[in-house]
Length: 455
Image 1 (cartoon, one colour):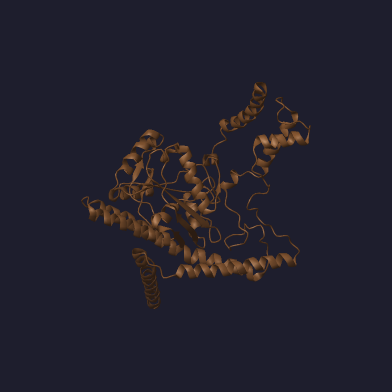
Image 2 (cartoon, helix red, strand yellow):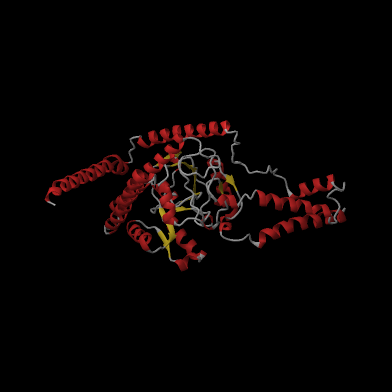
């Protein structure tokens, strides 16, 4: 028994030295640079290395498929059906002209008209432009994260070994490192904001609150190995305004908050999230709502209006879509935040899914599972564009203003601009959408009949 003591002592000493070295490296290369907003360029070198590996793997798959006479699957970026941007009236006119030879001037119902609605229904079933926005974007190349790519078969021993090596690196090295960083960032956020909260209101408290938030968010960003490129920083949101952005993931918050100062808006939660919220609000006037208050639109609007009218308070960060979309499109913006009358600062966020899919499919994964997927991905790579501030025009209502801001974000981020409500992720299509098509067709028939009667 006593002969084992020196060996046990050696193991303990080696373990202690390893932990000390690990925390020293974390402190020197990650935590301290995060505090001062400095980067050594290690993540960019890491990203370039990954790109070369992905390119080699893709070429190997293509060569293997060619040798085995195997057709390669290519995802359809613009859908599987080519759709022309034509109106209901134009299409029915074309159907009548090619079928019965009659024109749309005939007010009676034509049996051939039903072919338009049949075709539209089949197109929607085959290529639904809404439902596919709530599932992960398909990649053309394999990124060694999983075997979900349609093209991946057993190609070679080297490719399979490379995949296995990637699993070991992500789960045995990157995951523990990222968990340690996330724990450090969250602990510092709770501790720092709590301490700052006890200081008297003034410039000192405001300065410390901003920099504590910024430092902790930057540490959390590094916990995801996030590589972010910010564009047009001169347009960053200012006090008294509202920052609106497209929504892909809960990490959108830390992506933006690691480059600026924001007041958060949201519902009060319990558990760990509740602890974080209570600590944050002590240092900075964030806008939290009770569960019973969220549905009261007038109360929410009143609280937001009071916040933006105080020019000393930080800009509010809002995601008007109300749900996460897979970063291929922007869906309908809720009009609430556009009724307030404040200056709106649009922000477009575009993720690169090659290194890791940031989209949170909340109907499929819980928060813990989602975070585990994020922390075991290669990296989170994204670009952020700050667009020029926008204000509501005198002739615009809130819905028109929201659509104008949404179009600007979609255009800048290279996203599809959709009019559909993101709430369709969990709800059925409202009857009003069906009635709208019925009204268009009825108006077309009745309207033409009335015009003919007047003439």
